[in-house]
Length: 585
Image (cartoon, rainbow, N blue to C red):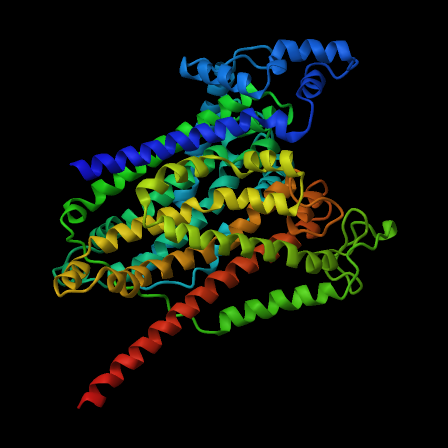
């Protein structure tokens, strides 16, 4: 019992240290941002009041800023230890009721969004269960690549304005849940469905499934057993999605004026209302820790005694059969569109042709300033795709390494995942200013937990497999086991997962650009294109659909190329194995 106890102590210590570091970073916002918090609070309290030296000095004395950062942090820490979240610097009201109300709204929205996500994931997994073989995953990848804020804008215009079926803003009843829940649930369902559909074919080929089918067990019961078998490595991903749907819905909450915890934190950060910001961030972090612990418990219950007794049998990888035609066609389409756009001027303004529809002179139309959408799409590809690829590549290796030390990484992972990229983007932008580099750093700081959780789950199951126990029994050394069995079993699925997250990383960068924290005008970055086109999406939808379609094609290309590479490797291994007996004979 000592080893599990010490592991729990290490994980708890890392969680506590990470939590304290984040709250301290939030508390130091006025000092590293270079902005006078007294002036910001004065503007938030009363925009008409003159910022005289006397007025600013009075605010500093009222907020305790004259005592310095150490004294302010100590005072805030003592209050938090007593359960006192403090008083808002702007409104003068207690922080706890505001945080509680925002969290209740976000949890309600999360529940509805999760229901939509599970329905979408079930629709994507059903064909695999029926046919017993995998798919290319292109549809799931394209759904996962739909920008949440763009989908929210389209749903608002179509379902709220044109058809009038649902309310367009506010939070007063179940009807207000529908549009934001769909906007959040569809991309999340695409991600979950893709991960489950990728793992199911190998499970359905296992011996127990064949025996059940031969014994006349119903297809529904076999499908249920397969889902239970495939769930343990995916349960941490479900937990990460739950937390992301709660705190990461800032853009959607902003579009629909939903008073959730993410929007509360965003408003507090912009006004430098530190007590409210710290309270909102603390609520999100505690939620992340709670969900992470629940996910770990569910996963251990699903694995049962097989994990403890090292009696697991890992399913053999069975990638879907994908021919080269799909990734080649998608690559030609995307590269052709980008190359065509690179031949045009992305900054040329022609107000006479503003919001012009697609034509021979402007194949994808023009934007609100008359600039060619195709040109801006092509020139923005290097920034958007290149930055997203760099973030994914930099996150893959640390996540893979952290998968081998889950007790140390678990706490930091829970804290990092609970932080919305927008909040981290605000903190980074405060120190370095808004821009592409700051947005990339913000996304990189919080994008690795899903990969690390996936790697840790796979490492744990590989180490508990009967095959690995047999290798140790015949004298295989630790280095041999690590390099020949553990790493190959873990690195491949995690790399495909990282590739699958490439469009999602681009979307996170786009979300920061949408909120003014990423690339700045007139840069032709895809997220900025989506933000600029949102104001006139009803009149000129082509300006928004072009970057959205490019992101969808990028997602389909990433997934189909990964599937084709995996199937090609499997085919080569099979051919080699078939040649060995004839050579021996």
